[in-house]
Image (cartoon, rainbow, N blue to C red):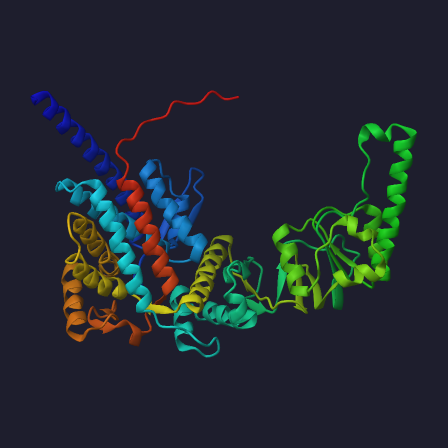
Length: 514
């Protein structure tokens, strides 16, 4: 019996040491971004072995580029990436919540609560908190002159008025229906270049120039053909070309191709956007006809041009159709222009779906990169708010829900209630970090806010980071999109449960390379 007791004790010690190791690694990663949270958050400087420098307060940029070796820490980085891909903002909040949930969960396990019960309790607490958060959201009905939408963009853009105005203007251009589309990202409308002027226009840009300098720089009221592959003759296999039949077939294909190119002139096309390369003969014919060709365009840009101009993307084989049939595939734009300063091509005023481009410029590569990230964050925040409404920011909504989670814990039977407690504690971390970054005592300020939230039955009271006093976040305009907050909490809960489940870390043997 003593031997069994000793084995059990050693096994429990091993399990706890793994959890403690994972929690320490997660805490270390979270601390790298914690100082960036809130209006008084600071920047982080990233330096590589070549002494290249990035200065940013963007959570996902820091986490993606910092050196991370610990497996559990890499899982936290995955949370930030998932948050960025899904809603484009809130990566720091998601990271802090995940780290806090792991930390609080480990504390409960160290007290003797079974891991399975802690995880089940965390999952129940997260579900309850998410439902409460959705109940407390405030909807946004209009894109024009909406004060809350302006405030969300202003906060997400680090209080940059120019970026705020650009993002709102772009949102109005594409319209509510487009913003609600599942696969559309307003942040994808943001482009940056060191030599660009800050502008917003109705249309899109391709990071390619026209095929040669003899083609027109500008076309007005142009008909547009979007070709998914190359504008080149089909080819016969190299071995077959060595035979008379193969050579003859290759010549027929080339002659057919010449006919295809002539069809573009008959169609009165002004712009041809090509996914692959362009044949020298075709390039010469199009140039002589005053047609602009842009080749080597990636799939995403091809789809965007087709959607905006109302063109139907075609394959090279479709050029065998008659001119009348091909006419149905042609799109239209009011302006097509090669920006020779940027080396990019601009298409605007399409007859298809509305589209907008936010062009951001700055003096240096480093600065323009950071401005692009900020602008993308603001665009993501605006779109998220339109989709799901908004909630009080500054950690106020999390603190208010933490109080309700504590009440919910009292209704939970058994040891799962300890996991629910972990959720209540973790939800206090965002405000605690914001307050600490502003230079105030988080313990003191959190208690003040909790007392007043309870007294006034308010979910919007937080800390004014300039004066250190309790203030209404809604009245101050400190708000966050609900989808950003909700996804951060959901993703944090999922990864925390995954990390707490890890019983042992075993190094795999290297597989022999084939």
